[in-house]
Amino acid sequence: MAGLSPVWLLDVDGVINASRPGWNAVPWKGYAYDRATEYKIRWAPQLIARIYELHRAGLVEIRWCSTWCAYADQLERLFASRRFAGRSTTTCVASPRRSRSSPRSGRSSPNGDR
Image 1 (cartoon, one colour):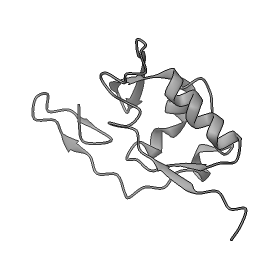
Image 2 (cartoon, one colour):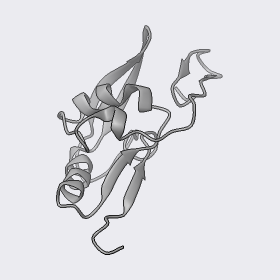
Image 3 (tube, rainbow, N blue to C red):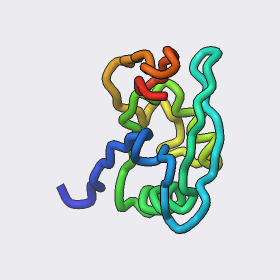
């Protein structure tokens, strides 16, 4: 099995989307939409760049594994149009969407959080 890169199943919330992503810099912000609901996404551009570099070098194969999979195209646009394997739909691995209402707002997000 030599020559095969490990597959990273990459989640969004708590991994990339974090209120304080660290990396010694102010996080970048943008918005993703589920129907008419807007969700703030915060990320460290240095983290996205590093993940992309590892993928591009062939050291890892990145696949989205998140309840955000249906919105991977939006996330990739936010993250400076870096797509991990060409088309989002071919790089997404997830269970069926489970949307739960947020106890505070009554609104739901693709991951069930707000």
